[in-house]
Image (cartoon, rainbow, N blue to C red):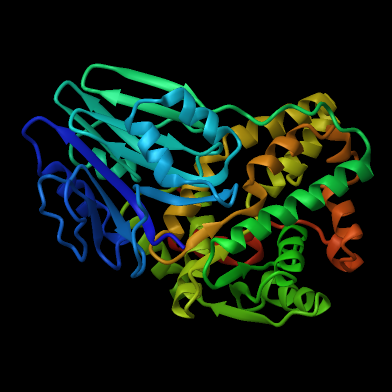
Length: 437
């Protein structure tokens, strides 16, 4: 699997030390140092003073850096040639590269650079953050906005699902094609069967690129589906997080038992939560809600890493895709089904913020694996008629049907949703420890 946990790049006229400065701003991502892509053999182990380097990467664990600077993974097609993609980009064959990436499912950001230009690429949802600065004598990029802005630059987010070409005086965007639109799906069993197949394919592709895998498990519908599918394909660790007496510890253990799985119960206390808050807030700011969620992801990722796991699988994006939030039901009741659908589509398009938060929280420890974020799955789910997702009484209707088809126990298929920050007890501690921002 890919050891890279962050990217930085700089092309400039007479400012060769900028790359070094950017990398040091992201030191929390680099427990195993940095790797430079130079004109000669790459350097590593904090040897970041070679001035011929244009791109450097943070290393999460000891391992061979990929042939081009890529943060994340291409999951499918399995034989996709990342090195060939790098050559295509440097040859400025951007339309060809965009066409090649149209059928790719992955969670990635890519940076390649030559003497006077830089090319940035991001996946369909922007699962791996990437920011850039373009000035008349300098072009720079980094995984973290702060790494650029703390040096006095004003950074912009690289567009997702696109190739961005930058030179000192030019900027061009090449959109990566979307998968074909198959039309609106209105039959419940047809939708559930297809979602089941796409979810299995997504989990399987991600497991092939992962090392040892831990699954964040609440006993809810989203994580239970992942646990059911993944455990039939590979040995995984099911990890339940929460404060003593929290719903995720008590119900998580019971739900895992219903699935025939042994869950590890990771019981944390207020001090653990406060320590995680301090680690996250040392490098950037969060509002109270994002901090509560980020702390949960950070604690899960940290525990997984301590036990030798390289990948943390989570159920993010299932709520946005399948109508899991109460606000969709409220929109349906007050304004109609179209309003609920528009809200779901908007939330998927804006999911980048939450994905960036979770990537940031987990980056020093593990790679996040998010099967519901699969490109084919996302595109298909957006074509499912909203009546198959939410009505006056139920949410996630089609996903519950998938669970029934996979013979999940009824106690799990009908379990009410509760957000991670509340079901773990973390939000209460964060609120008590920190005034809302």
